[in-house]
Image (cartoon, rainbow, N blue to C red; front, top):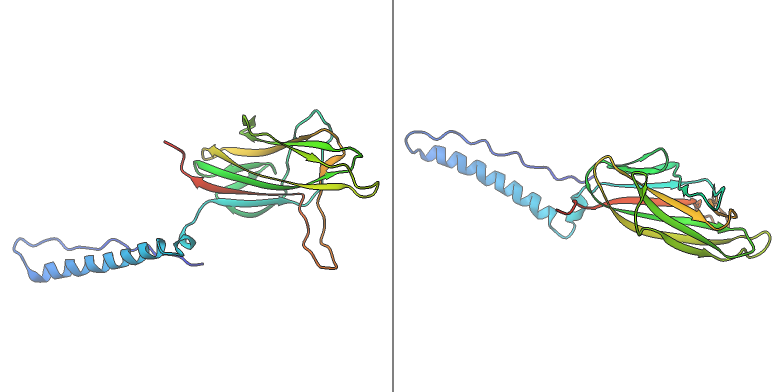
Amino acid sequence: MQKLENPPPPTLGYPTEVYERRHFNENNSSLTIFFRKLNGVLGALFGQQGGKFINIPHGAFHDETDQVATSTTTANTVVFSNTDISNGVTLVDNTKFTVAVDGVWNLQFSMQVKNASNDGQDFDVWFRKNGTNIAQSNSRFHIPPRKSSGSASHLIASLNFFVELAGGEYVEIVGSTTSTDVSLEAFGTSTSPTRPAVPSVIATMTFVSNLPG
């Protein structure tokens, strides 16, 4: 891991009552070394590849199970069983993306939605902050009817959403559907050609900025 070292402040001697060139030269040398190191750190940070030294809070999560709606009149909180990356974002109770610092956060997800019914169905997805629905956060997806009796239709539902959170607060992804034949489906690894497994849902959380004001 590449890391920038913060130069320690220079140690300067106390001035003498009478001007001495030696004392002046020692302090001047210490300051020169410090500012050269500081200039090197700032040059690396703000250079073309300086972003590699910035540690921005973030997290990545996924689930490897099918998630089935048991009712068309009940909201279902999306579940995550795996933490892939955790740096300032923690998954609590398998649903709550809990942040460590205040800020504007970007939550992005991708869902593998399955429809096993003969009719097209609607699938709503929205967000909750600290257990309360966030106003104007819902989106509706339409999933085509199944292709045949043994072949369901699939749709990728994908969104990103900015949300303001204080340290310790959390956000969840929630969904509902017009049919219990609609679910989030996971697939194992495949062959011919060899392909990775397909999670039922993937999500990432990224710090965007400090809170306004």
